[in-house]
Amino acid sequence: MKKNIVYIITIVFLITGGWIIKNVVSENSDVAQDFPLESLNDVEKIENSKTYTSTTFGFDIQYPENWVVSSNEKEIGYNVSFSSISLTEPRIPSNETKIEIMILDNNEEDDIGVWVEKFHTADQFANTPVGAVKSIIIANKDSILEIINTAGNNYVVGYIPVTNNKVMMVTGPSVNHRYYKTYFQMLKTLRLNFERS
Image (cartoon, rainbow, N blue to C red; front, side, top):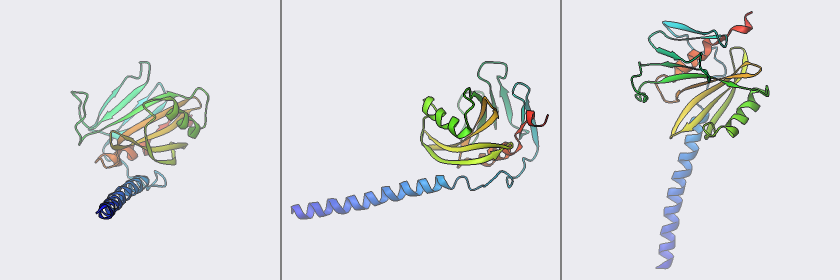
């Protein structure tokens, strides 16, 4: 009798353990494939776009013309957001999104990889599980894209050096969201004005 119980428990463990391992591996595999693009060159252009220009930080970026822009460029803690819907309450409906740009300090003028590592270590909010990381050129700068798991969703975040002591963080939608492609379309249009002078 004891032998049968041990046998049954072993079988149940192997089946459920195998299921858990299979799902963890497939989840990680899916996340790892969320950056199939080698560069932004193959990303399509945004049809019917407008351009947002930051005079404070000297950059511009295109966004869909029917999206809503809000900015606190004159306040401490620069932030601009591009919303696919006019927001009347803090929560965004699940089929809509907000792409947000923040400018953060890089006082030690670290390489972007080092800066991102320090950012994750120092910032409690940023210290969330990272599912995938990709080095990529954005606006002619060595930049980093990450997929970060927050509240069970895999969100995309980009880090782009703006100057030696400033980093742009661009947060986007989850990887299975209908506006996921729009995020990359916008990143493709990002221009850092000081490069052109």
